Structures are given as C-alpha cells and as structure tokens.
Amino acid sequence: MSAPQPRRATPSPAVLAWYNAVPNVLWSALSLTPLVVFCYQQVSRPWLYGFIALSLLTYAWPAAWLRHLQLSAAPTVYRKLRVPALNHLTQHGTVVNRLLRHRYPQYRHLPPRADVAKLVRDTHHMERFHWVMLVFFLLATGYALARGHVGWAGLLTLLNVGYNLYPIWLQQYLRIRLGRLPR
Image (cartoon, rainbow, N blue to C red; front, side, top):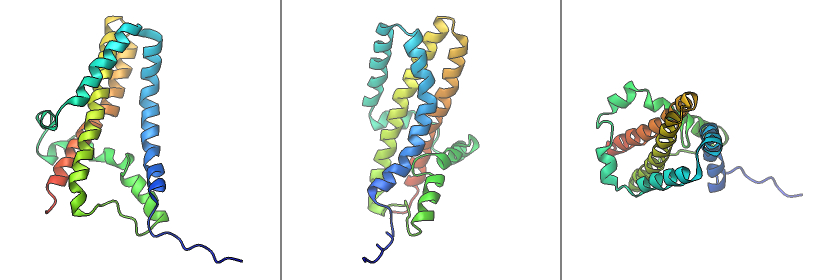
C-alpha cells in the first residue's frame, strides 16, 4: 500500500488555467451568444465580413495609441465608475483567487517584481482584444439601427458596455496600479 501523495502547495499551471478560464467562458458565452444570433439571423455576409476585417485592424494599434485612448491617468475616475468591482468576477480576480487559496493556502497571484513588465504587456493584449470586440459590437449595433432593429441595438449596446468597455477600463486601471508599484 502506497502512502498518500502530499498536497501541492501551489496549483499546477493546468489548474490555474482551468480556474481562470471559467469566468472567461461564462462572460463570453453570455455576451457573444446574442451577438452571434443577431449576426447569423440579420447581418448579410458581405457586411459581416467587412465588420470582422475592420474590427481586426484595431488589434494592430500600438501601445502608444492605447495610452491616448486611456480614460484617465487617475485611479479615482475608475473607482467612481466602479471599475475595480469588475475585477472580482474576472480571471485572476478576487473570486478566482479566493477559490484557489481555499484549496492551495500558499497560492498568491502577485508575481515577482521582474514580472510586472509582463503583466503590463498582458493588460495591453487584453485591452486590444476588447477594443476589437468593442468595434465589432459598435458596427453590429449600427447595422441593427440602420435596419430598424432597435431592440437588438439596445441589447448589443448593453452587452458592449459590460463585455468590452468596462474590461477596457479595467485593463487601464490595472496598468495605473502596476505603474505605482515600487521598483
């Protein structure tokens, strides 16, 4: 009979990926399902392909452009808009980290100081993704309005704010906070 395996002090990369994938999949399914239904049912294919192409162009925006599109350099503006609250329900957010620490008490998401630059790059990547999606949602919303689908336009606008605008602001807020860490 073999001895029981000792419990790991920290989660494996696969476990971390799993825990952090859950909020991504949940929010994506809730937001993208109505968008996909609208596009499939209502948007003619040439328009759809054009929307995709235009949206993907925003992925090439340099980091300097993202700085110009930043809402504010002060975290208080983001706090007034309740942006930090979003971090409770995202990957590496409060809920995910609490669940991980419950199972792995020594786990901490805070990286070594040398990894702060990587975190900043990750925020730019995530912000670009949400800009791509924001542009696509805006184009689809404009199409819905042009076709007289006011209900769809309202729903897509609401989803765009929750799925894209607030996450963009969250990435900007996180960069401000990372920039204030002592070097």
